[in-house]
Image (cartoon, rainbow, N blue to C red):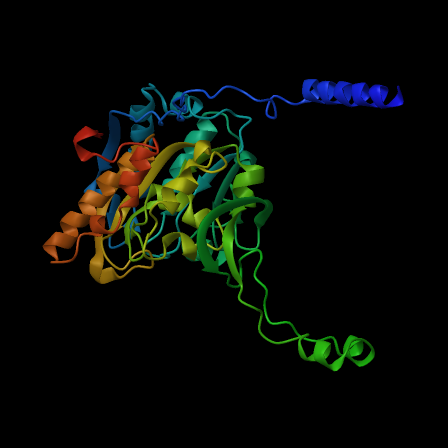
Length: 378
């Protein structure tokens, strides 16, 4: 009798165990292969407009006429927005409560950088839109470069820089390794011993390894500027019209990505030369999504030797571009650089700046010149 009861209990246990199986454990009849859903492709813009203002009297012997530049910037912003006044044009892009960042490019200072006159014109327009000066921040990577370019605090904006001021919680990661240098957030420098601790703690081996060069200092991470992650809510991107010996072009995409992170050298090193790292980084909503307008400083253009610059390859171009499409403004700039380089019998910069085409596939803007319209602004 006991044996029969034991057999019944075992069968009952097995039955309840089968009922308790999760769906993944339950036997199911084989199903035909189902097509897996693929994520939707980014919507590709079909058309872009770049606005262009050229005045030969805007610059002479590298001396900028602020009055002329102010009119150029004002007219460009009104054309881009379709507004009838400067104040209403800027008000359509930002609110008085915004913290507006003006991202300049000063790596080639003093001659080949964003001109203070253009920034002053932007600040004047923002003030007309009700944005107070304490809500305007001008920034770039290095304090020294900003000063060489002529920027000073207390000139209608707050002046900040990214070096030594990167956000430890906001990281851009890619498979490419870069060697950290001084100024990068996670750089480990030469470790010097504390002689008091050395005398009282640790073995001889510990003491030998307590100083000397760091290990490899390699990282696949880049930290984003605190200015961008914690302070500004809207960005006016003001790059320069310049080639770049590493990635072909120091334009709008470059200025918002490579120039806003540490461990940046890995993003433009060969063989990719910025492709796809630059568009990948711009597509990060913590960076590119804050940009409401790009104004490219072409008062002085550089078609070789950038971003540092060489006066032998500089043109006093007297031109400013504006667009809501950063890829389109870069494509127009790159075409102009190639024209100058062709005249100098140089290799086209566009052969190196492949990241622009990739940026179009990411839905960041239009790189196809046939789909970009240029409006001349008087």
